[in-house]
Image (tube, rainbow, N blue to C red; front, side):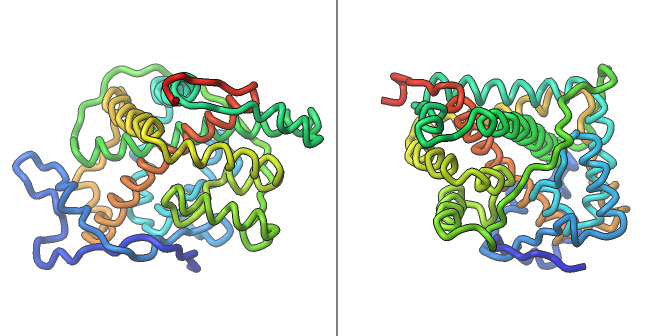
Length: 324
């Protein structure tokens, strides 16, 4: 299987500590021991290169979540098929409940409220009209922003649920409401790949990756590249905000909320040491997926704020005295 490689982290050598790092009296994962890392490569398996059970899971993810693409987070897990299969099996019961998607909706609403109340957001709608952006284009842009706010909040909940499962294996299930209810976005967005983007757009892409601390672009930014004028204005407004203490405070608050909401899910993920051992998940793979999950938990906590920023900007912006 061909794998796309991007700069990431090197896993530590745990020597003869055994296959699993959770050998404590509580049978919990030793998260801190798993997270001593150095730079290495993060492997992504794009949908076009996935095969067998990984490809089948990709198809199921799109169907169950109602999205038209496979996010980089799932592509990263696709490089660890033994874990990915266990994860998807553990996720399915949670994704069948209304409570899971209600929690994701609460995260999205919190991100929107925090951006509106604490950050200065310019009127991007007026800027787009000034440069000749049609109403139809603005409407299309608003639709994809709704897709990304929904999708990123769901991904953030999945990260939170995994971290809770690593730290508290064997959590008991509680009564839940079925079937799940959530939006569906079947139309595949048009993406402007880094390799083929105009020089100015590539320059913005590089700056986004550097500022986000990520070796790849979230799908939303590659989609925004379809509207280079919007991408330019949006990033020019967002980047300085991301560098402020008030942004970091709200980033940390969203991160905390994701973990807290995940702890309340009626069907917690079951990722016990026994399950993972029986599935053939190695010590190195376990360490890698814990790194990956923690990385995406942090990244997506920023991303939901950034997408809320775009949404509010196209709704007329917001001015906060707290950001002064």
